[in-house]
Image 1 (cartoon, helix red, strand yellow):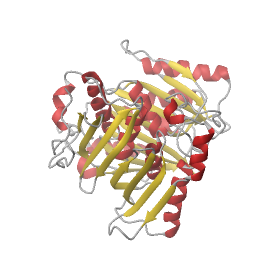
Image 2 (image 1 turned 60 degrees about the horizontal axis):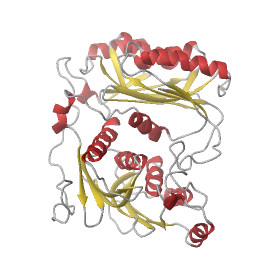
Image 3 (image 1 turned 90 degrees about the vertical axis):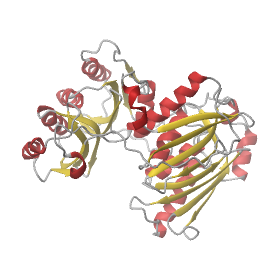
Length: 463
């Protein structure tokens, strides 16, 4: 599937038709919100190893995702969280650190956290989380956004980049994910004058050629094209694209590796009409965003929850209902929730050797670099492309096209062609192994034991 988006200010929210109980805009609700503005307290004294953020607000559908996305955008790491949004009121506590595991010390940063959260959930913010926009997103008319989904294969990013270069499109930023033989990308491109591409015939030509690339020799899942106007948070949109592309569906061969993956369970607490979701997996940045984003996009509401990620493994527990008020009510639905959450967590896990490229930006740079990767038998499993002050700052996760780790000699040849100082290598000790050693996906041991109501015997498995 290919989507081309010309970024401009949205004229309406796409989430207004979810449920009248959540997005009512009558005068009474507006009055209640005005009389009870959100209250955000940033406490740096009560916890010795983390900054504590307390958020109190009138509840609305999607507010948890809005707050979590702000924390993610501010590059904060959530090590503990307590979620409660029952009874029409949202009361959450987040213990956060900076990426180095330290408390936020500068008063300027503390004030900025408070301001960003208040702006995100305050009066005038979106009443429901649209699948076409995100919290506090600043629209731009300077680029055209291209969304791609299709079957992954070695060299796909190189082929896509080459087509864009031939069409005189400059990639100013992009993010690419691959998971379970599927690939998704969101790219921002400009024309030769560094402006958004608006000509309908040119857009149609771009879609047609990219569609041909994505189809390749795959006749089972054909590419689709669509044009729409709007903007969205890149990472949330990637989750949505892969969810819509059903990357959570696994083959019978892959089902045998279940013990090596994230552990997700869904049981029903019949006395309270909740479904209880528990997640145990290796901790990493943005994990909370990935799970909350997926539950929200599947139209589930988190009423209570807890997160513990102070060790190398993370434990998450959510008490949810569907937006229509019902818990998970069938085995098929339960399986889908489990599979979608597993996929959401695994998508961002970066397999392969991490390469960082920093050089002057130019038209065709991404095409040239990925072509060199492809010519040396490497495939890109994940990529982040950005342009800052006319500099290209790109991150690639690569591995051998056969699935093995990168041969050191191959890496030396690639760096000789691109430039030793231009292309830096990260994580050498973990990923530069002999070609006979295949990389492991997940290694989980000593996981948190659940402290949920399920262990206390207050809830029982779905039957």
